[in-house]
Image (tube, rainbow, N blue to C red; front, side, top):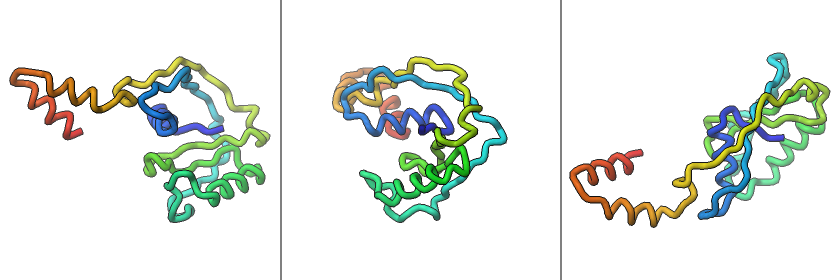
Length: 145
């Protein structure tokens, strides 16, 4: 089971796998509770192969995950996100004895802001069609982000 430190990272991790311009269907965000005393193994950037961010992922990454899963030494494996390497995804080992202590706190429907998956061409046409003194300022602010 794969999770992320934040909902925003989890959303980006899902978004990169959807073909645009289609909106990802039927998503649910799930908040879980993991006991504070749960053992965590961390894989840092120096522990990863040089090509770890390529797509599709190199087989060496699966080997790292498989070895961790099979060893069942820790409930959690913290790994850098290929989308945002400064943030971490957390893998949960469903075969670890401590899995029974993991609890679902709540679940809620989740949708992306349509601007993340709708065609940028349409957005550009809409911006060019604006008139008035704030139009160029608004466009500059959007470009700076």
